[in-house]
Length: 164
Image (cartoon, rainbow, N blue to C red; front, side, top):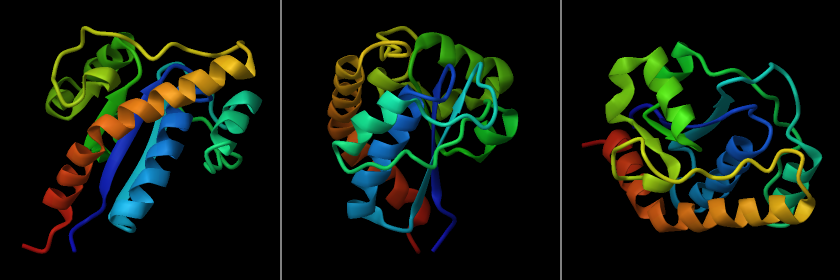
């Protein structure tokens, strides 16, 4: 088997949206392609080493996704280079990915646009500072979109990790 397929989620502070998306996708992919992938996350303005917010942890827990061990990290060129697929939560996050690595355009997408290219489109709203109810809605929205394009992600994992 070839190297694992790496998916990178990008948001601002790496304590809400991208950790929730990463946790949700890990949960979905464990059932589909265990051992063939790695899901990571980072923030365009993240401080290093902070946990996911209490409400992000709680919203994810409802769906048996454990974010309790998450620690925030800043988006770097090395993380972009490592990733096979980059999903940005908002247009400004995608722009920052491409500012750091202009050649990453073929693997970087606005989350809600995937698998279509282009940086214009709708963001996943940032729930920071909002109620648990808002975090729950955000997690459900992320999950709904992941469900829509899970088959495409699995296909890309298979293309990279197949023995042929």
